Image (cartoon, rainbow, N blue to C red; front, top):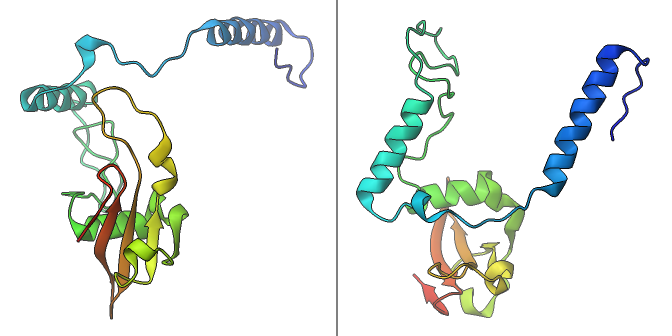
Length: 168
């Protein structure tokens, strides 16, 4: 039980009791990454329906027009995307994710024999290639090579571990 440094008031005892009950429930709950069959999205129309359902869940009626440069949206409780990726599969988006997103944690100098000649920087996520995945899913892990250009970086090749191939 978590005890906060506050006197033994009724409010504190109620809060501690609720925290204890919630803690017990969380600790006893069986956590799993299994997805119920009825929730799996397998077809394009199912994906479209899921997107519409999420948009509807966060829809807001009667919202005021937000001031200019605001992160608020008049039609949703969700904030506007600061820099939306229209298509994250483009080379430009992949470079942006590697340089400014989570990929920056995996940037290093390119010393890979498989990627030599493709650039001097690699976003190397190949360490996860040995992880087990659920049936029907592709194994994880890849290393993307980048070449610095005058004003940007260019994605030049990907060492795709699942297929054991360098994709140019």
